[in-house]
Image (cartoon, rainbow, N blue to C red; front, side, top):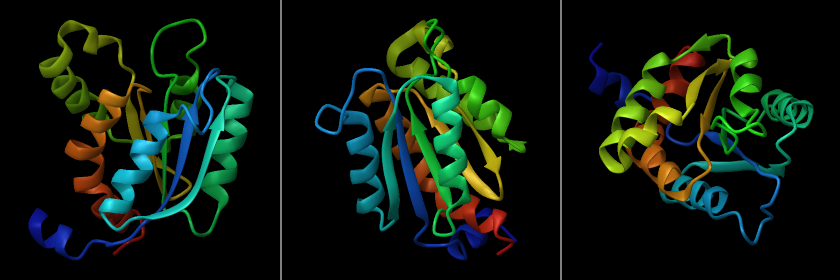
Length: 168
């Protein structure tokens, strides 16, 4: 089956749980999380949950485990905590949870990001794959990075990824 045929048969509406990792943002200042929710809605995806969590590995992991255990969740999209500062712990948590990695996601994201922001793109530790039979994607917390990743990578492939994991 061709890629086009796979995409045509893909799940059209996935249940998505959005997580923002931040020590400073709340629902009124979380522009990246709000953007993810808006873009998902524009593409007919279902919001199965949304939370903000402090950049504390134990709290991040607990929330991701909770989201991945929900029956109505097909994908968890995380933003924030992917850099290299001492407080950035999302990558380590997400990496531990991934059962299958989509290495190309991070590679292509950094290439696209490089075209926008130059060499600073190397500091992104965006990563994606599957955990507990669900899509798990971790994006940087900047609004520009979220916009780029969602429009160019996540939304075009979300249904396809979910369908593959569900054996459709």
